[in-house]
Amino acid sequence: MKKLNREFYSRDTLEVAKDLLGKYLVRESKGKKIVGKIVETEAYMGTKDKGAHTYSGKVTPRTEAMFGIPGTSYVYLIYGMYNCFNVVTKEEGIPEAVLIRAVEPIEGLEEMSLNRFNKSYIELKKREIRNLTSGPGKLCIALDIDRSLNKADLCGDNLYIENPDVDEKINIVESKRIGIDYAEEAKDYLWRFYIEGNEYVSVK
DNA sequence: AATGCGATTCTCT
DNA sequence: GAGAATCGCATTT
Image (tube, rainbow, N blue to C red; front, top):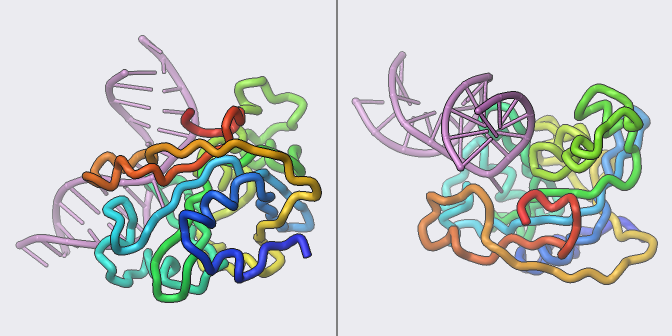
């Protein structure tokens, strides 16, 4: 059983965020399979986190997904044009989630390239290859993830996460989260995790 | 009904 | 390193 089950997600959010590093995010749509290795994550800790959408604790149309069952998705629109993909964790009613900030392209390179730059993978410049999936908005474009996948079940078949066949040793770096300067003391929490030395991490 | 702005990315300089 | 693009949501009138 390679696919991560509900129990994996039904744990402490910081643990899930770290354990997701090195796992394979799989997207199946239109008969195509796209796979990226998760290399960067951020934890958002519900009502005690000023950086989280759910800090107020109120259920709203946008944040409703974060209150859902662990192992489902929370996809939201940011800056009017980009989607961000999160994994809902902990337990139903506790609005915590892990933002997937970057993946490393593994399989379906041609499909990713077409989604991102509308041209073939072999035509990409080095810079474009590095920018395929090195950010939360970028990976959503590459893996064809949008808000139609909000509240999707990650224990299903369209979008899921699995263990790689051979897991390699990784060093995890802990650092401050990106883009939440308004979050007062919470902006300094070391709730961002990434694989040391990986080229696809968005901010080193 | 109106307002203000963001868990980003891209393109320039 | 700075500025633009762009719109749904949360909050305020």
